[in-house]
Length: 369
Image (cartoon, rainbow, N blue to C red; front, side, top):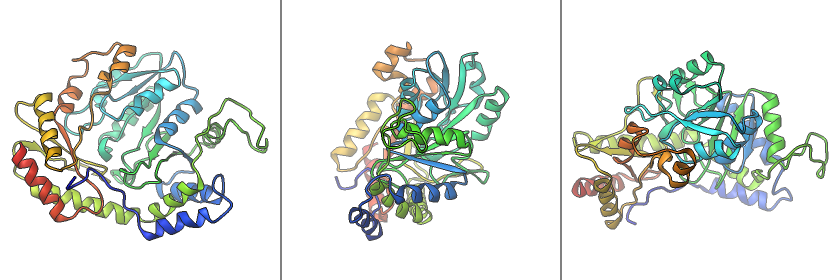
């Protein structure tokens, strides 16, 4: 590839921090875990943070801690990474999809109430591509119907809506740290909440169901090994300390894309919705005109052949074969999601992209289209 789809931003400070842990006797459940959790809680502004081994694990533990399970329904979006839906299925509950707003690509609050039933226990909205657009409206609906909000913030670290930070809208929220995210721990995630009882339950569940003071072989409940090692936490501590710098780098890349692609009527270029401060996760354009899945895929293939890393963020979750089979979903169920999904192209996006890299991507895209 001439230009890769994504790349982490690792400095000598991260490398030194990881090596320091490797030279210590505390590779897991050591001091770096608590240090990372405290730093993250302070950054987001919540009382508690519980680090786990992935965003998927975090969502699953939130649902589990809230007692959501078989017979329950959780409303979410069909335009997302699949874990938003499968985490609901992992606890035995049913994901109920609500179509998206075609402008900001988040779940459409105006369509949520029609899907609320007596089985609905929570709403799990996603800040798609880092945008918290209309999350205040989602929370108003949840409060009206006495539903919990579990905020999937895995793509949105550092974003805000009308000055309110992402990660503070829900009763619980989850961030993720895969290497293509704003910051990385290699693999990892973190749960945020102001509720001590829920946080304590997540601490127990991530650590094989152990309780406070029960000892290494004392297990109070069914639990899991979803721990995040001190090695990962050390990496995360340094990355988090650089988050303002990282956000600024990514904003600069997004702005260069916006400037270079401005005026091309063959595409829709992402911008910040009113009231939103986006911490850019990816940069996803959409084709306009007579868009078909075959046409979009032909563009993806041609871009890759020319050495440009691109992807199709996101295919409709409800049309993933096993999910469609289990939930009875079919084409046409969520038309906005389906129309958007067949038009999207995720362009290369990472902190240290140069102006020349971006110019190469934009020139190639224009030629291919």
